[in-house]
Length: 355
Image 1: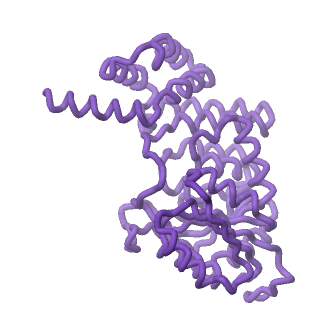
Image 2: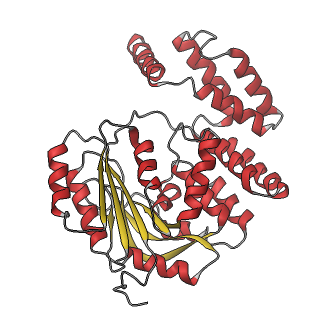
Image 3: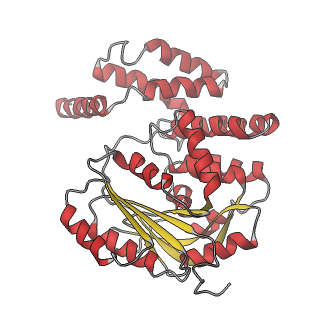
């Protein structure tokens, strides 16, 4: 296939671009994707009711003559997750890319990844090496190299690649960044329906999406740096403490939905190992005492955090009943609404001033 692909000869790739209040970033992203050497793309933009509406619309006006772009302006802010699902539901391509309005893409990004997938039909997705950058565009050197980590998942053995993914640290940018890969659309839409059925959409979990892709096939990765991944920028949702346990419960649910029982049994042991890793926020060993301390600080009634739940959790951790432990943990974490978190932060600050 010629690098300047004939628009009628190559499969359609849907670029999904939910955006919010970053006109300059939106302009950069549209420039990058309309300049791709792989030309048969549709670019689906959904503005999540940006306060800088006029500036965002000026950007869209620059690209008004490009028939590959479809644009929606939400009447109200529907949140990052719903806005992302909105563009996914509109995708018509055989492949998709989850894009963003704060990252950058090389002109060969789509062509290189498409070529990789065509050469490796057993792969579920294709990605590339990338640089981590600041919101100002400067390369961050305090992040580990991406390519060696990503190559770990170019593994034909499903148990092996899923084990490595489960045990990798949650919140690690290299673990979530493959959400930007080129992925077969049928895989994406199928698993999004499953995650919705399992109640896994109450939080946005890039790692769960990547895990789902790895269940279907290996990740093939180009050594070329074709992407720039931004960290440290502001988001349009309430910032809450990371809940790594949410991901662990999600891994278990997704495995049970797709894998044969003997594979689930093997991989569940690694979920149990991860549950007790010290790099897990509120790690397993400390979780019970931490929750008791929080209850004491907030003077929370049993209707918020039931002490029986904490005792049950302690029992399940000691007896290695991982699924039961994760169910209790999720039940407890659901109590940590923005209002409760603000109450906790205020109580901690008052305690610090008193001491």
